[in-house]
Image (cartoon, rainbow, N blue to C red; front, side):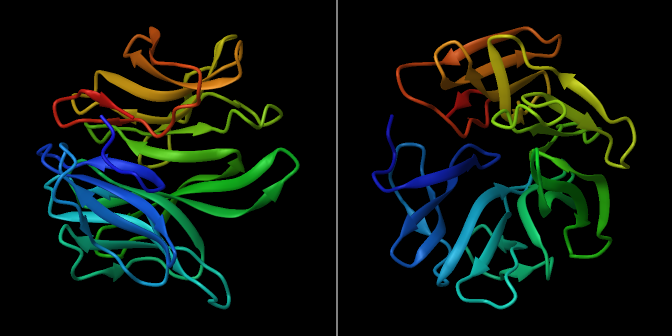
Length: 257
C-alpha cells in the first residue's frame, strides 16, 4: 500500500503501531512528518529551512530522534536532535561534527549514531558514538572505519549492529552486518555477505529474533529486502524488477519497506 506521493526516505513505526514517522523532500529542504498506517492524518513536524531527516522513535513513543542541518551554515555540521512526538521542544544534542542516523537504546536513556570523520581510498570514514538522551556522556564505541553505516540497537540492549557499505568492495567486511557491545567490546562479524547477497541497513525485529536487511542481489544487480533468522538463515522477502530500500518493522514485527 502506497502512503505518500512525494519523495520520501527513511521511515520508522511508532512502538504502538499507530503512526509512521518519515522524512520527505520539498522546496525548502527535507522535513519530518508522521502519518497513520492507512495513509490518513499526515502531520508535518519540522519546517526549518534545511534538512531534518532519519526519524527514529523512542521506545515509549513520546520522542523522535533525527539528524539535521541548516542551509548556508559555516562551518558545515550535522547534529543529532530530539523532539517530542508532536514536533515540539526540539533539542540539539551534538555540535560541530557530522553526526547521522540516531537510534534510541531499548530503555530510552541513550542514543547511538554515526559520526562521519572523513574519506579514505576504500570509502567514507564513519565511527559509532553513544550519547545520553539528555545530551551528556558522549563517547566513542567503534572507531572510524571505511564504509561503516546504519547503526541499530538490539531489543535487549546488548548489541549495536551496523553494516559496511556493499558498494565499497575494497573495504574490510564490505556487505557484512557487524555487532559490538555498547561498551565497545566484542566487535565481530555477525552475518557475512554471501556470494549472492550483500547486506545493508539492517534493523532488528521488536522481539530480537530476526533482522530485516537490505540485500544487494549480485546476480541481477538489484537491491532486495531480506529476512535473517537468529541462526543466520536468510531469505528474500521483497523482490521485483526495481530496487527496494529502507526496511522497517511494524509494531507487531511485520516487515515493511
